[in-house]
Structures are given as C-alpha cells and as structure tokens.
Length: 476
Image 1 (tube, rainbow, N blue to C red):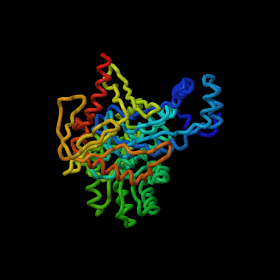
Image 2: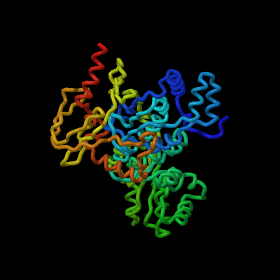
Image 3: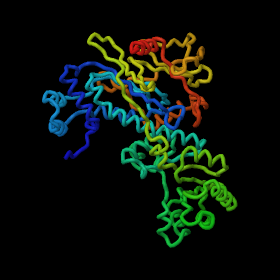
C-alpha cells in the first residue's frame, strides 16, 4: 500500500494505456494541441468564472513517477518495460496558455491550451479537468450568490457538506475569489488568506443552564465578535430578548444576532424592530439555513432586514448544477518542421463538434464604457485590428450580426509554461479576488441576469470559420 499521495497517478487509466501505445507506436514525441473548454453555463447563467490555475501549476511542477508508481504499473501486466523506464524520467516539457484565474469565460472558448508531446499532453488531462471543473463550478455559483446579496457580505459555510477535504478547502478558495467575504474553513485562511469566520453553534447554547447564561458568557469572552445564535429555543420570545439583555449588561454595541431557521423574512423584521427599540440600531442580523441566490433574492424582495448571509451546502456543492462539464479535446498536431495541422471532432450532436486549430482568444471591449462586447476566437497566427470595423455574429445563429467600430481587443490566454518552465508569476488569492471583481464589473448587467441572460457573442474569425466548415463539408 502506497504511503504517500502522488497526484501524478491521479489520472484515468486510459491516459496510461494511450501513453504506452503512443510510446510503442513511435508517436511519443508527436507534438499536439489540446483545448480545455466547457459547453454550458451552470444554472443557465450568462457566464462562468475560471478558477484553479494555481493548483494546475503546482501539479505540473511536481509531475513525476516514483519507484512505487512504476512498480504498481508493472504489476498491471499491460505496459512495456521500455515505457516504464521512460516514465522514470518523465517530466512536462511543453507549453501551456490559460486565462488568469477569476476571468469570466463563456462556452466553447479555450480556458486553457496545451502544446506538448503526445504522452505529456494526453496524460495531464484528468487532473486539469478535475481541478478547473471543480473550482470554476464553485466560483461561478458563489458569485451568483454574492450578486444576489447586493453588497451584503456572504460567508461560505459549507465544509461539512463538501464532498471531501479537498472539495472543502479548494471550494472555500474558489468562493473567496468569486466574492465571498470569508469562510468557515480555518485551513483556507491559513493557506490562502480567505478570512475564517464563525462564532457559535446551537450546542454552545445548550451546554449552559439557560440561554441568557450562554449569551453572557460568550459576550464576556468575545466582546468584539459577539454574534449570538438566537433560534435554539424561541427566536422572538427568548432568543432576541436574551441577546439584547446580554449586550446591554456588558455595554456591547458592535454585535450581531444570527437566525438559522424559521421564516427568515418575518423573523428578521420583528428582530430588527426589537433591537432598534432596545437602543441597538447597530446590531446586525445575519442569516443561514440552506440559502442560495434565489432564496436570498426573495428574502430581500420581501423586505427582510438582513446584513449578511452564511451559505453552506448549496454553495460548496453547487447543488442546483453540480457538474461544470469542462472537456479536453485535441485540436491540432504539429510536424517536425513546425507546420500545424488542425484536427476536429465531429458528432451527430452539434454541441459536441469541436473548433479545430491552435487558437487565440480575444476579448473585445467598448472604448467608451469599458464593457465587454464579445469574444473572438482566431487562428494562432492572426491578430485583431481594432482600428477597423469588425463584424461579429453568433456561430449558432449566424443571422444575428452586429458590427463593432469603437473597441479595444485584449488576448485572454496568457503563457503559463513554455518549454516546461514556469513563466507566469502566480498572483496572491487576494489579487485574484480583486481582478475577478473588476472583470465581472466589465460585464453588462444583462449578461449577469440569473434567468434568460443576454447571450454573449463568442465568434470565430473568418479564417477559423472557413477551416471548421471545410472539415464539416468533407463529411458530407
């Protein structure tokens, strides 16, 4: 039994059988290109948020097989000894481009592109997908919840409902990047600086002879962080009155109460009046209890008096849309002379037809408002001239066209590894969070709607369009 985890072996077994096949077929050094992208925005939203690049970088840098790995693979009885010897010195030597973490991204555009020898490019598929799929999913859900709160802080409270330790920790990281004010996950604070937050559970209140004693004790211990959970017994008859008494006795005005059950809109209105009448207008009200963006939106529409939210299971699992659906597809191969030949996957399901070739992704911004107008995919050797009008259309509905005349163009994919060497300086989580907030501000409100958002255009250059449709015509 292996005594330590090595994420090199966290791969689908067919990555290894294909690698062995490439090696024995003389294709190990064939240069190829893969795109990682997704097809559908979770929850029917207007965009997703790409998160997880830092963990991809760490994985690539540590990629290697140790003796235990080699012995295990030998025991499977299906790999050649020459291939196993090759794995002893295996390292990633290729190139990777990716959008920075925190970037809003749209269906069918590359989030990450790999150029590498066939074995290397194929082998890293599983880890890249599981990492970017998970954190992008949680970041996308968290940002929807944060936007529903309309400027009120949202705390991520989901560790105990997450599907495992990594899901809790990296989910908290993704949620913080996407705008959550903090997390209940202490280790996420230790590792990533996502502020750890939390006060008491119902068990604290139950441990004392009565509710008032529990509140008094907590206020004495934490006079500057006195948030009292008031629904252990009866919110309006005992919880709020006892909290008021404890705050008043100890002269605490920087305080809060938390509601975790019941009709949160009704209880918050009643509690607000009780607190104000007691001379505690600065006492805040926070709520939890299976919240999501729709419940938060409805609470605010119903006139709930709420200052912050704790969101757990429906955020950390993205319960309403628990799969991100990112895929990793071959889009080109390169010969010894450096000539790039596009490749395409064609399916009877049009959504599964890929866009071939080694590509660039441009985001086009309005010069006046700064808002994002559309994204344009081009062949790698094309550049976008933002001094001349550009006609953009929706590749799925080609009759929907618009002409852009006053825009700037920015490349989204940044070099991360070149020749196997890291050329990208990893930003802090705090910097990623600030970048994410800014990039989302550049999206139109219509794109940020929860239901029926405006469809953001992701177009192909004429050259790329022609290449793709040449492949499609060849199949008829």
